[in-house]
Amino acid sequence: MSDYSFSPTGEKFQLPEQDDYSKEFERLKELVNRQRALGREIVLVMGIGFVGAVMAAVVADAQDGKGNPTKFVIGMQRPSTRSFWKIPLINRGLSPISTEDPEVALMIERCVNKKKTLTATFTYDALKLADVVIVDVQCDYLKESLGNVRSGQTEMKALEESFEIIAQNISPQTLVLIETTVAPGTTEQIAYPIIKKMFRKRSIESDPVLAHSYERVMPGKNYVASIRDFWRVCSGVNEEATRRVVKFLNEVLNTEKFPLTVLDKPIESETAKIVENSFRATILAFLDEWSLFAEHNGVDLIKVINAIKVRPTHSNMIFPGPGIGGYCLPKDGGLGLWAYRHIHGFEDDIFKITPLAIDINDTRALHVAQLTRDALRNMGRPIASAEILVLGASYREDVGDTRYSGSELIVRRLTEMGAELRAHDPYVLHWWEFEKQDEYPASSQGLKRFFRGQERLKDLRVEQDLEKALHGIDAVIFAVRHQPYLTLDPDEVVNNAGGPIAVIDCFGILNDDKIKRYFELGCEVKGLGRGHVKRIKDQVRDRRE
Ligand SMILES: NC(=O)c1ccc[n+]([C@@H]2O[C@H](COP(=O)([O-])OP(=O)(O)OC[C@H]3O[C@@H](n4cnc5c(N)ncnc54)[C@H](O)[C@@H]3O)[C@@H](O)[C@H]2O)c1
Image 1 (cartoon, helix red, strand yellow):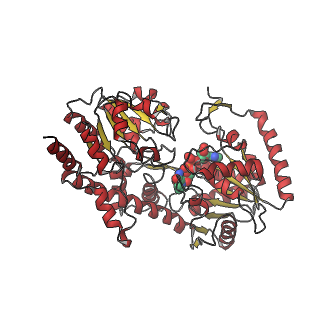
Image 2 (spheres, rainbow, N blue to C red):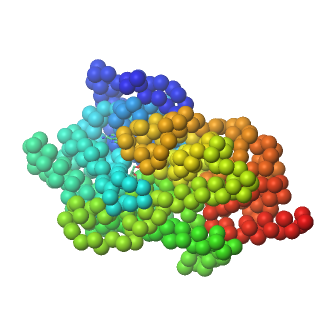
Image 3 (cartoon, rainbow, N blue to C red):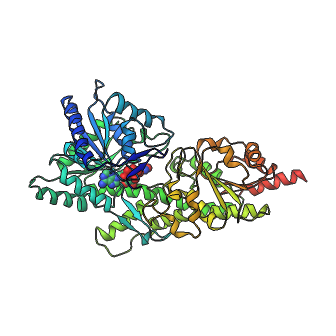
């Protein structure tokens, strides 16, 4: 089993063997020689995940004023069973990411097959060929308990390993650009010494050309534009590194329209990322208590937020949905707390709001299980053995990324309470957090350990046929604002289900007309922050009487 990597569609790829490495390096050298002759700079992107794969394509698509490509990109990925499949897929010109943004697939296809400016590989030797290395590997924050970010710690292994390997292989003048969201201080206090030490071992006298510039990518409808046509912050460890990173970013991003912000030191760029995301996490967490207030007092928080957002100073207020998932917001503040103590050596506890926000966000989804239980109870049905369909597995709309999604917690809590769960998501073929729950997101680090009775979730499969998924359910949970869910017709839902059901709206997906119609059809409706549904229910009942 361990010699194969499976793509999400089930295609099986054999992992490379010893002999394959030298052949692969020869292939790359030939390609690079040809590309250098065309005057192109060689850029290696390390880690072709959600960020790296699209960043690699954006760089490979860059061109000069005459329309000629200026870069040749090698996407480099560890040949792990979990990720190796991304390499052969990209080399066919196929995107490893499922998203609503058509430009992702088009761009990868164009760069691999037409422009021939993008290839993917598994060998670290490729680093020897690079003029620029972009680091897009993950830096995880491992939590020890649910709703307590303070008890966690930064998992630096993958990143530290990458710095070592980079330092062993690159040429002295290679620009190393760290895009990974890191604990502030990492570039100067962890990466720089690791690389410099290895340089000295290799008898390289010059200092590393090292810089940080964080990604603001928003997977979803504007995936590509959120990398290419968006503002960037950057900083180098010295003048030379700053000059090189500014030059590089100006060549690959649309900095004319979206100018760069250059900060004095990498710790400022690193801190900017953590503060930016903690700010977002805090606004979302703040609304959790008002969401409960709304539910208890007949208020529709969705309408309240829309009313407030009209005021330009408050236009970025957003409804929190069933918890705040994704790879970034649940962890980034934790990286800051951890850095303060473990990189910078402070003992005092200055952080109050940042950890509190993350803890609130991490447990918000559990309330959905309570609403589901209560809605079913109002219909005289027990939660145990109830057939419940969760619509949306990913953490946000229009993308197939399930990392730390609120939906996962909903499924886990309801399973613990004895319900039978089903899932549907147009962008997710496999919900690995369940199918391979002992390995995802990392061995014994999954959310499974915080709940009981989770074993049977290994058999949970994401249904692609919505009609089939609805058949015979007792409750439906609208968990993600995926496009197809916004237009679902209550009559069709109830018809497919085979009778009245409990309907739980986690994201303001149902307008008042739909809520009313569900009540008319004999359903029970509840929603996060949607206290006004009771009023609609009373109106429907009064009319009936
Ligand atoms: N996903 C987002 O929306 C987003 C947004 C902004 C910033 N970021 C940040 O970008 C970084 C990457 O995130 P992601 O979502 O792309 O993660 P990811 O897990 O999808 O991708 C990381 C990739 O790096 C590979 N990798 C790990 N170690 C490696 C090594 N030594 N050599 C080569 N490849 C290696 C992994 O196998 C994986 O494919 C993180 O720091 C994240 O916080 C992510």
